Length: 158
Image (cartoon, rainbow, N blue to C red; front, side, top):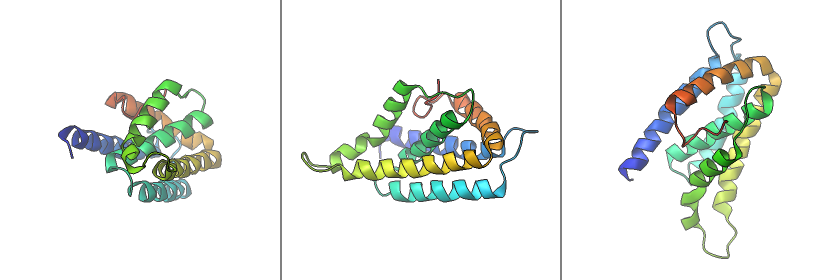
């Protein structure tokens, strides 16, 4: 693994840890309850277990962070996906899969990774529907975490 890949993986790992820590929300904001936390752990865990077979850990973490941001933009006021940023980040995540498919074949590795993305996205949409107020309050913490990281490799919001 190249040094830049290792650094990117570690940065993404730290960002994901901080992002998941933000599920508790800001002090004084509604806390995500145990059902929501279990739902997210299950859906993200399933997504990670499926994608880790095809992508490096840092890429898998990026995939889950992108799904969470997209679900937030769909569910919460004040969040909007930047289509160009989204395409750039997702293309970068799936780029290593090009070598796993020969010309003329179905691109099953990309399909599997996008299925993992959809699993994570669906879990986040369900949790947001379960308690929109708590989910969106926690998203404010995620926004601060991602903006503080100033990471173009994962941030898809405008």
